[in-house]
Image (tube, rainbow, N blue to C red; front, side):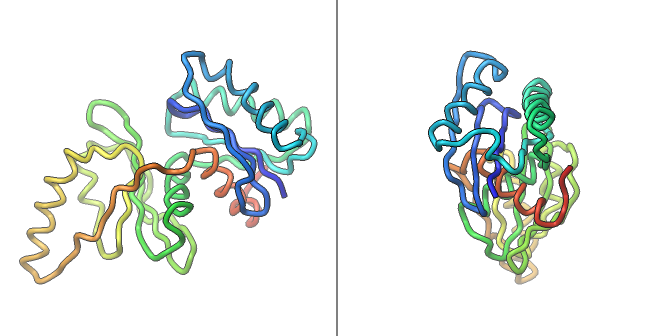
Length: 220
């Protein structure tokens, strides 16, 4: 099964093709041109480099937010146009969930929690917390938009924590330390966390997430 995944929800335009749970190739680009100008050429170049055509694709996927309104509109319109033309099903992926999958690609499916964050301006973030248990990813804390200072209240640090996306590290660190000091006083050591950088492209993560969604019939 071959999956074509797109992402233009942020500054980077990325496209990827996956087959049977493995990424065959991806292309990422940051350009002064609008995403709408570079997305289709990137798709064409990617498919040609793999000696594939759109007729070889079994599933399409893209992010569905949160993120840049214009960017999300571009990728969703592109996916729908291809789907209508080629009769290929679509599996949309939440951007925060895709971030969690990018951590899984890099770190493996070890027991942990994943804090996904996307900048919402004015020190606010879209965030959600996910849990990896027995190799499966599940939603632990529903997505919300909150001031970054409030995010720490939703983290219990019972499991190792990975932090992905827009970090606001300078804001989070003092809040973490204040929370840890209280827990240390109770004899609990709970500061097992890591900011995960140099993640795979969002298109790669979207492709992997789309495969799991397809396997459980969550597509249209």
